[in-house]
Amino acid sequence: PILAVTGTNGKTTVTEMIRHVLCTLGRDAVLAGNNHTSFSSAVAKNPRPDYFVLEVSSYQLETADTFRPRSGAVLNVTPDHLGRHGTMENYADTKVRLFANQATAHETAVLNGDDPMVRTMVTPPGVRRIHFSLDPDSECEIIWDGTSVLIAKEAIPFACPVPGCHNLANALAALGVLHGADLDPAQCLAALETFQAVEHRLEWSGERGGVAFYNDSKSTNVDSLRVALESFDRPVTLIAGGEGKGSSYDSLLSLVREKVAHFVAMGAEGPLLAEAFGAQVPLTVVHDMVEALALAVAETPPGGIVLLSPGCASFDQYANFEERGAHFKKLVADLANKELVR
Image (tube, rainbow, N blue to C red; front, side, top):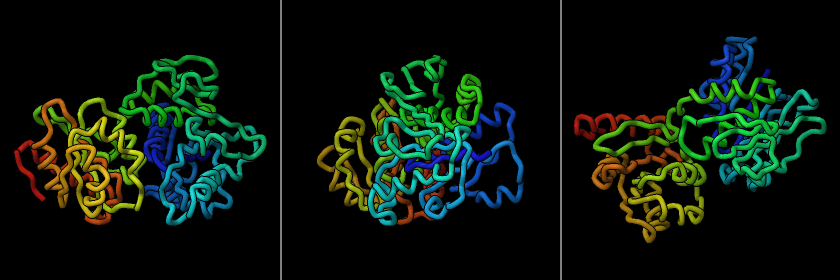
């Protein structure tokens, strides 16, 4: 059986959550798709695991004519890749192709009830639909009520092991996909409580002098930067920037005023970030990660957080977001020796 996940943000975390639950429950689960392992090579290596768990991108769905997951989820649709898809409507239409070949009540479409573009997506007649929501007053099938997950009106206590409301939503989505594959919800949630953050996604990267460092290098668009900032209640020194995507930052203005104590803008997008946020919070433009972290350390008092969440692509200075995140983590590790090296 194929369990598949698509969406603008959260795909990797949700598929990792699903794989973690399956492996914890003793199932053989192979993760592939829009990551470092193609589906075809995964099949060639292990053609009959208990489950394939696939991360699926909009680019892949454009030409996926026969793809048919047993259970799948669309997490969200926010502005990204519009240079390719043209409009948000076209982008959403590509995402919903995840369910195009489902045809029976034994197949499940999991949809984010809190995302207006996802909530109303049309799925094939007869296919089981499961909506998830963080709104305790929602009529969705899976709901977070503040302390427990409500599924089929049964309350199951759950403590999400990774920070942020978006990760609660990710956990509900993972549960929906697993429930759609007929796994026991209570067992799934118990397994999810032992999940650890995925590398480069709000990854705790160390602490020095009472300052915590988080690597969110996977943040490559405005929406992912938003959810990162919403994850913290302590003052944040934000390192953002890189190769911009031409997006408007207007939606972040009030959140940045609320959360950010000092904004460190780096890379090619630095001047545009300064233009967007310079009147909102203290902001400094720097050239690269070395300068950015040195300034962040100097500006962040004990009890604060240094957050790398670029909101931009990495290609102005790095081959990919993984290389960018690895460099940040190395520099943080070097702080133990009071060194900042390239």
